[in-house]
Amino acid sequence: MPVPFFDITRQNKPLEKELKAAVSQVINSGRYILGENVTAFEKEFAEYCGTKYAVGVASGTDALLLGLKVAGIGPGDEVITSPFTFMATAEVINYCGATPVFVDIDDKTFNLDISKVSCQISNKTKTIIPVHLYGLACDMKPLMELVAKNKIAVIEDCAQAAGAEYQGKKVGSFGLGAFSFFPTKNLGCFGDGGAITTESEEIVKQLKALRNHGTTKTYHHDLIGYNSRLDEIQAAALRIKLKHLDTYLDKRRQNADLYKKLLKEIPAIQLPSHPATCVHTYNQFTIQVDKRDELVGFLRGKGLSAMVYYPLALHLQMAFTKLRYKIGDLPVTESVQKCVLSLPIFPELLPDEIEQTCSAIKEFFKK
Image 1 (cartoon, rainbow, N blue to C red):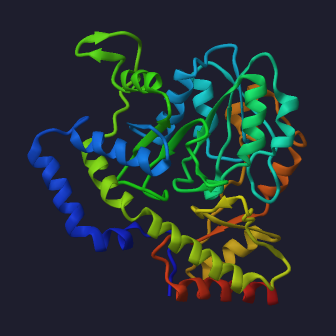
Image 2 (cartoon, rainbow, N blue to C red):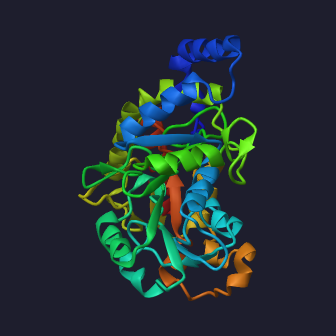
């Protein structure tokens, strides 16, 4: 039987009546932009993340961009981040006229290698964007010590990690937190959506103006802003799903445990790291494996799904040619990109489907 990589309809089906009722309520209210559901969701999501505030925006990309804007990032500034992430993390730095500075990653967690960050800090460094990749928190204690010493802002890329924890604190509660609610994320809506978490009331005021064309009063624009509002229908859906998020994450961890049990005896596979300091959310279950591309073809030939996140690191992308990175500059990232492979992990995935996938992987390595 085919095994999908992700199937949001399985999650939506048990919630169908509640979701339809919530959407109908919004439609019948006639209030579709920045209404009561956005306000309520912002409060509920902030409470979930352990922060004072959350501000809804149109996407995870906008969450990062507006975070940089309130941090005052502009031309001439440098922003340190990971080269092993989705394009949005770095392109928003470009949008601000600043320069991305890529630092190599840890080969087990796939997150920024904090020990390599300090030597890249210059007098132009204004912000660091750690990426909590695949649902695993970055090593935040040494990072926060480093930024405090150097008076640098932190904007956490939490796109793949809603609900993840580091030393008992949820991601998004260390610096500004930028979240995505794209449907494939831990907490997903029916399209694009995002949020920014913060402890600062002043930053909230700035973000609310920035997301709405720079207005603090109708038709009075204090600054140049954006059209980046989380709409009412998405907020209504997110409020329903937020109540189930911890259950979804528990199911992801159960699926991860089953994968680990079934694949642990295969020497060619390096299983995902799960440091004791972290609560992993497994937005992706990513192994490292030799003959990765051959294995992908073998699995797909059997109707089984697998994805590569990410086959070409950002420092080697054509879009960043002007930064003059070359092969060999970030050796760990360049090694990892050749062997990472993500297997289906969504909460509604069935044990039989995991077993089917693992059986095929075992078959491949016995050839």
